[in-house]
Length: 400
Image 1 (cartoon, rainbow, N blue to C red):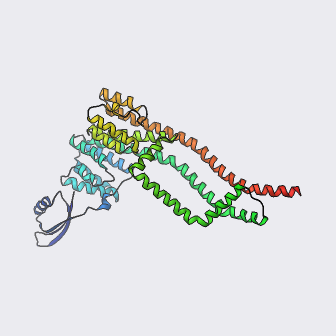
Image 2 (image 1 turned 90 degrees about the vertical axis):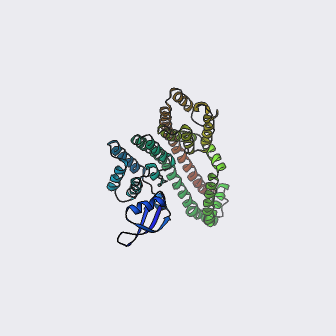
Image 3 (image 1 turned 180 degrees about the vertical axis):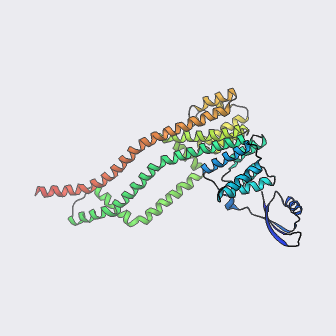
């Protein structure tokens, strides 16, 4: 809803400066006249982008949705429920968000329109669920489904983040150790070897060269690393680059299955949420495709959506060589033929999420020995490059 800066005169002839939200300037003028205010100047102002970008942590957002659902089920109207929640909320993002939504709803704005102002907290697919609940007079049920959906998505994200902690920590520790050895330890041994005029094996020469490069060219190395990351990010943001990256991810051993099942769970969760809220299947498929997080699978869903639009069932509309797990087609077929597509999508969501967690556990179980072996190999290679010249020196001494 647009915001307006108002310069008005009240009944006592005093000038007042106000800021109000209203659907249009004409509506605002009517409202001001009803308050015995005569506007001198009305100017539309830009929305507060900082306010619009407010977001709540997933647990707080889910708790807020459950509180709103309970009040609506108890017979409290949305205006009063939002006002009470805003009054009870602690100072901060939650109160600011609730106060903004309550002000607009109190002026007659639909709840989903008021929620759309907070574009990061209520992206289009979430606002669409609220809209469907309002239109069908099933708002408490829609709010409950929304809470379950947000909670499930948050759990998936937490699972993925926990899986990344160990490899990231090991990678950072390994990089720091290698940097310390190349920058601090190797030069000391290189000076000793140079003073002894020993013939050095190729592995030691290569290690000393790497050490000199790190010590003398570390600014270029850091700049090159940042440049490579920026270039990779730019390529990944392009449609073609993202398609190639996601296709490569799907073909990785073990990790590819994790990506496949996570994308399937996201698609099924969003599509089910919208379908059960009464959103047409074609719109639900479009949103589900956009939110899979994988360009290859999203493209296949868009192709399936085009076939569904001309009357083909979804389970036959998917490409023959699709990237989804094999269980998705039988589940969709069962759901569509029995008229229980929502239940089928829920089954796909739950099963894919559980398989993703299992695959993540397997990947971590395999990753730990691989990382330890790599770390041991690197440190062992550096140690070997130190000891080979020493063995040669000791052998020469013993020969004498």
